[in-house]
Amino acid sequence: VPALATEPRFAQCLRKHLEEKQLLDGRCRMQKVPGGLVALPVLEEKLSKLCLPQDMTCELIQIEDPVPSRAARRRTPHQKLQDELRRLMGESWSKELEHDIPRAWQRHGDMVLLSEDSFRATLWEKLGPALWETVALALGAQRLARRGRVLPDGMRSPSVTLLLGQDGWVEHVDNGIRYTFDVTKCMFSPGNITEKLRVASLPCTREVLVDLYAGIGYFTLPYLIHAGAAFAHACEWNCHAVEALQRNLVLNGVQDRCRIHYGDSCQLELQDVADRVNLGLIPSSEEGWPVACRVLKKRTGGVLHIHHNVETLAASDPPETLVVQAEQESAEGASTDGEVQHPMGESGKETARARIRAEWQRWAEATAIRIQELLAELHGQPWQTSILRIEAVKSYAPHVHHLVLDLECRPALP
Image (cartoon, one colour):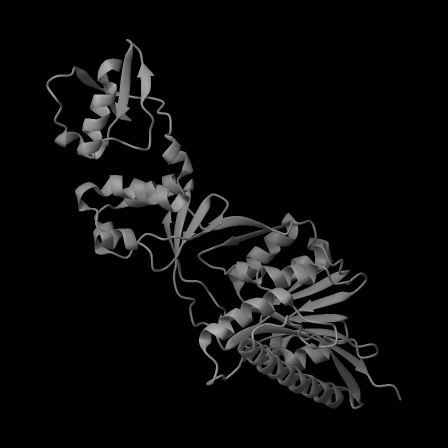
């Protein structure tokens, strides 16, 4: 770090002068250096503008081990990133660039994944690799990537650009489970953590699971590692996700308790094997319902976990009310009799909450009836379905909620 070294008696006067000229580097502390002098860090990009008072003696030196100032130690990661980029840009810095800096990002090991709307100003392009090296250094990362829109290819493939680094493979630990995947090829949704935690707590000892949309093992692994499932059949048609799933099973030592079925789960040839079926596809998993019914054990049945985005049309309710309501629902969860529980609140919010709860219940009941019909058609005998739980995972909009229906399915007694 460049600094001006002067006699202690001139230190405060020089500091004031540098502050007035906006030359002082506030990230580092003033410190003593050999020769009985005091060094004041200065901004390297402004050295050409350095004009010193003639009434004090000083010399330009380099501090090898600068000490961070108190202000620098208190800086948030966003502030640190902004300060480093301002220093890099020098006189080219502007409000436009400041607004183009991300305030949040995802971290996967030594990689930081930036949002798709960050660093879009044309001025950044002129910096070349120096930009990404500065960003990585400020955020404590070795590699950088930028997220894009999910591709409409039926596999929810990410559109991610690698900005710094040789490859996109990362490792992420979630509830004690190790996941590795290539961020440029596979999705990882931290927003589903509540559902993964819930799955991990289910009593699945000695059970066989069929996961119709396994991905990299988002739910397959919690079932095997924490819920104690005896065996899992994991279905996936994305070759990149299959590669990650294979690695993840080995990473977590459960490769002997899982068989991967590569291809379209609608063409799955399994039948009469499952105590539990996970249908983790949104916006709808309905295409997998017939397969789920077929793989359930026909003598004893089992439980289906059906994911679905439920839309609630609410022309009369303000969006703010529904956003508050959605957050509360996700936190509060649901009861075991199929009725979603909610705390009492203001009358308007409670009305909206009750109406949305009724919409969820109607969807669950319609789904239960349809599954019951599919099972009866498949086996040529009556079946019973029972709503165990309606779980709100998260909201995508004021009127769209990702739900999971736990549906118990049993052959009817003669």
